Structures are given as structure tokens and as C-alpha cells.
Image 1 (cartoon, rainbow, N blue to C red):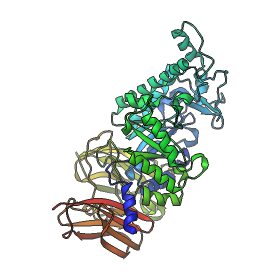
Image 2: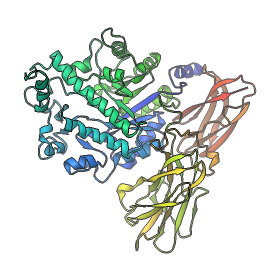
Image 3: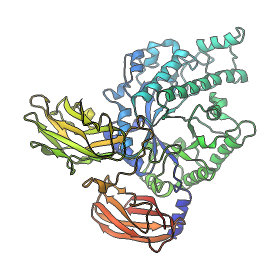
Image 4: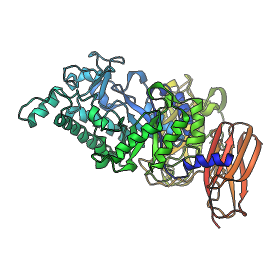
Length: 626
């Protein structure tokens, strides 16, 4: 029976090399750096590979925006003042090998009555631009959820949003930008003065039809959105052609083009004309039959359908309308996606995950990791983390180990006072030539320096000094030091010192991290950094390494790490899910382990090996070549 169960899992899951596994991260999960880190750990443990991070919400950016400041005098959502939520999410997501897309959640929404409504009562952007307000046919403005929308047709509104998109693509090593609410709140919208003037200019002065469902009037407004989506795509690609441009339209019908009829959202056209790289279509239903009925309309309707199936990813919900869907039905829906030859799913949303769903996802839906469709293999490898106590890290005398000020993963940190010349230098294993983002983990404390020197080294060996405020609690966690070009091999990347930190101040040192910068090195081929190449590297909670060598004949070694002592099992299976060999089964100490595997008795081919340890489970593939 065990063999059969595993076969069922493999049959619907990731022996295929690439599959989108996306999940949305709302503002509720962005309360602190520590919360973001824990969320990303859970997402990665469930073998997702993409996270959509809220960066524009309720009419405010969740990142420091010069564009928004020029219009409003504010740089960021007041609830996140002093932070850069998007940068924090990128650091933690890329640490776990996740692609991060900046999710412009509310699109043309400019404000919400219940959240910092400004003096206008609508939102800060409308304080500055009262004429930007979208209107219904009866002259009212707010929708049924008390959101106020910006006029979709105004060139200055469109330019404002396009500049926000370009700002994100320019400032961050982001993997994608996902658009949302590129639609009208209903076909009763579009009656603002500017849209009215556009219609009159092309209709001999006649006013727009009072009936919002008038076919020509609907087409007129939908084409405004089509043009904007094309401009948004071109704007982002002009800044960074390697950023995926995606959208999350809605679709809830098996008999009509519902998103167009209700919201003038002609997303079929976006897909067919190349105005998006792909769409995560919101179809939040509670059963597989309904999902398939929707997909049948999208792909098989004789009047209007989508031909580019590879660009469409069904978005599913764990609890549509607040009612949890049975895991058996969720599994059927994922299976339908795969059976139809589609390349993945997105999920609404992280906030609905439960311990039971976490176990379901990592054991049944996504029992092994998968690459990203359309990307080179290992596009987003996990960050390379060097701890201050690792071999190869050198330091001067005078550093104290602190047990009360915790560093990365709750370990102790180092501190040095302002006297003398004290420093710590970090060497990291660089897997390939390329540009890397270098981060330092800050164990903040009010006694630390406001300007702790971090000297950043590239492969030339010439340092560049960056100062980080280690006193602010807002900086507790990963802080980007800068981008450097590094050659493959063991390289000195960072030096932290007490140079001129200020009288009675101190400097802290903890872990350092490297992540590949895909904005600057989109073609760098990264192979897994095997931990045996860097002795003393600590296990990142639960870790299963790629066997080495691979391919192999007939022997190979499998390495793994356990976060705590306890029972573990390492088993090899063939592609039919049949157990080939139990390599180890029993109690193990915490830390790293290496297990040899002799496949002399096996035929050439692809095999799967799986490590289980308590609630953890991970599988990888290996190739035996005779």
C-alpha cells in the first residue's frame, strides 16, 4: 500500500522539472521582519517556489516611493513608516530560494474609507488630485466595499501607476510584478469628466450611454484597460526585461466571459497579444467540477477562447468565501490542472494556511521542489549563509559573545566596543561568476552604533564602505549592504569593524548572506553549493542535499542535515513509486550526515530519494548512468 500511495503522489506532482507554485502574501503577514522570515520559512517548507508580496495596497505603497512622495509628500503607507517591506520580503524570500513578485494588489484603487483617508476622506492621492476620482453613472464614487478608484482613462493617473511599476523594477532585484484590479469596479463606472470627454470626442459630442452594459460603451472602456496593460508590460520590460509581468484577473462562469461583462477586464486579449507573461486566474471555487467547467469555457468556447494555455495558471483558494475546501477536492483541482497540461497553480492565500494544510501541501501536493516555468534551472537558489563562527571567518581579538542579543536563527551574536582596532572578515563560497547581493544580519540593540562600517569587497579586492544603523529595532534582521561582482571560488566579501563608531557605542557582527542578483546576472548558471565545500556551515533547519556525483555510476553520496535529534529515514524509489532501498532508518543526532549509496544492482535510469524526519519530508532526483 505504501508503494501505491507514493505512486499516486508522484503521478500528480513534480517529477516534471518546472511548475509554478505561487501563493499570495497579504499585508497581514508583513507586520515585522521576524514575521516575514517565519512566513517565508513555511512557504519554502511547503515547496512553493513563488510568493506574491503586497507592495501597493489601499492607495499606498509598502515600499519607500519617490514617485508617491512627489504627489503626496508621503513616501510609504503610514502603517509601515521607517521600513521597506518589499526589500525585507525580497531578502527573506530569496534566502529560501523563492521567486518574489511585487503584487500591486489594489491597482486603480486610490483609497479606502477605513484606512488613512486623508483630508478628502477618500485617500491621500485624492487630497492632491481630486479630479482623479472615478465615478459611476449616478455620480457616486465609492464601490460596495468603500474603495475609491482612480479614473482609468486619465493619462496622468496611468502615468502615475506606470512610474510606480518602473520604480520597483528599477530599485529591486524583483522576479516579477503582478498587477491586480486592472479592471473597473463594475460596468457602471467610467462616467468621470475625462472619460466622458474622450467618448464625446469620438462620438460627435454625444454623451456616453446611461446603460453601463451598452456593447459599444463596454468595448470603449475595455480598450482603455487593454492599452494600459500593454503600456505597463512595455514599461516594466524597458527597465528590466527579465522581470515577469503577470496579472491576477478573475473568472467565475462556465457560460459567459464574466470578467469582461462585469468588470470590462478583457484578459483573454492580454494573453493572446502578449501584454502579460502569464496570468494567475482567480477561480476560487470549492469543487473540481466547477473549476473544470470554468476552464472548459476559457479554452474551448467557440466564440471567444484562449489558445495560449501555457500562459494561464488557475488560482485556487483554500477557503473560498471563508468556507474551507476539503483537501481531497483541492487535490483533484491540482490534478486537473496537471492533466490538462497546464504548468502550475497559484493559491489564495497564506493567511488561510493551517497546520493540516501545511502537511497536506508538502506531502501530497508538492512533495518535492520544482523549477519555475520559463526560467533557467535554479533561477532562485537559496541564499549562501556564512555564520560569524564558521571556519574561514577571521576576526581580531576583543569581540564578546552575547547570549542575550540573539542573531540569525536565535543564535548568539558578537559585539565589540569602540576602543582599539576590531574587525571580522567573512569569506563565502561563490558558486559561479556573477553579481551578488550581500546582506548582513543585524542583531540590533540601542547601544549599537548608528554608523557601523561594513566594507564590501568584490573580486578585485577593493573595498567599498557602507554604514548600517545597528541601534534601530527596525533594522533587526537582514540588511542589504550592496551588490558586488564575484568570481567563482572562496571569496572575501565583507568586513565589519568598530572604526569610528562613536564613543561608548559598540559594533555587532553576525551572519552574512549572498544571493544571486538576477537583475544584473540573469544568465548565471548556479549549481547547488554543496555544504562539504564549506566545512562548518550549519544546517538550515531541515536540508536534503543533491547527491554527488550526479549522474553517477554506480556509487554516490547523499548528504542531509537535521535541525534536532530524532528518527529519520532515507529511502530510494523508482519512477513507479516502488521502494528500491532503505538507505538509513533510525535515530540521528542533530546536524549534518552523509550516506553512501551503491546502485550496482540497479538498471540505468532516473530515481527518487526521499528524506523523512518528523513532520519534514523532501525528495530529490538522481540519475544512474551505466
